[in-house]
Length: 556
Image (cartoon, rainbow, N blue to C red; front, side):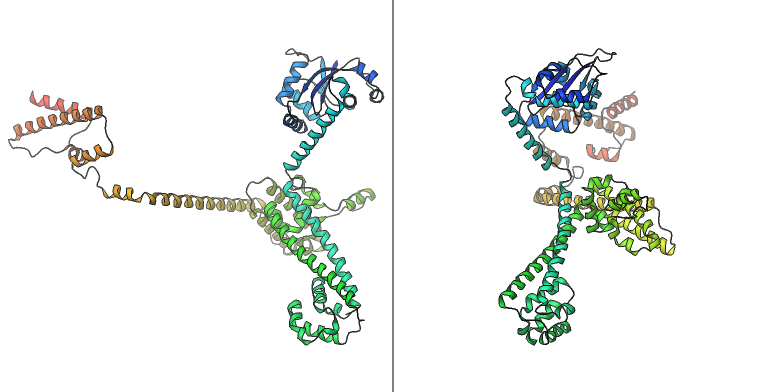
């Protein structure tokens, strides 16, 4: 069976034919050794066709299609033109070697061309890549390098620009920075405590918080200058007047040594840096909370913003976390303990990062594993809703949190929890009701805007509303208004005149007949509108014919 090789380069598609290859003797090691020698490799592999890309944009589109495992129309036409044609109902006497198995399966589905991708084909393609500039005439190595460099830059730029998980990157970077800041602030605060304790050792026992200690050290500076006049300022920092008085009293009887002004300045500057870092850490936490409410509101409302962000960062993205089963999510972050337990045949870990959730801490020792498994199940549901739902809502996360609370009560008190189906129905109904309310509000706003536009034409509307209808007005006025508002054509006017004349003739005949029978003269003839209202005379062609027939019968 003949073997063809499809090679995708930065300059275009190329098709090679491998000659003299026995399927039984396909030794990968032998091919690997012969690839380096062009004289030996050139006898085996020869160029069949080459199709260059029209532009850099075309090359980028083709590269994106190949990376996604798709076959473009250009590639299909290239293969159908240069490969031997296969008759219907018969097997192909050749196969196509490709580097990407996904592209091969797509080619086989569309064109029925048999494709293969194995180590032997990959070694042949490696040789083609090595000697590619020698196979094609008028192609310089510098031109090929420029094409590869330009395509690499554009492909990487497009991948970064159109990254599906680019929103998750902000959360991942924020939680990494938050953890780093916590470590740095703790180490720097310990350094401030140790440094300033040489001057004022009693302050460590009075103030335990690192941030407050740095602020007090910045405010006090030299303990010998501290007096009762500084008590209000210390009270504002500490938040307790008694503690402020205690600090002043401890400064008077302090056992610390005196520091030079230069040393005190260095201590104050370092304390200011710690204060700035602590304040930035608060702002970063607020930023993380806002990003989590936008990206994963259900996961954040279920397990908290920080733990949810750690799960996303450990999985790599929200979509990767949504693809994880609940059993994987349960031990996410405890991989070392898991593999150690598998290696030593010990007990596997019950929880990983979700241990930092408050639910596991509130559970009893014998129920920690159960609640961890249940919480991982709910976190998996919440992450999938956040990833694939088009509506940004936290209702499902709140309902899932209620379910975990009910499960805790069930383990502690034995109270039966609600079923998951019922809870999800309530959540879906609340989401739909919120969506309908938003639509109603949008419709009301649209109606208000329409009313405003109608108010601009109010004068015209008032004139029309104040005028009586045609049936209430005399026929002459109605006719005049119709003539002024809607000018009729000559044909319509003639038709109307003929109809009016025919109706008058019929009415005159009916009245004359009535006077002959009763001997009493009739009143004035009614107008056409009044007759229509009374229902005595029918309008239209059928009514006219019936009336004429009745009159003729009575005359006879």
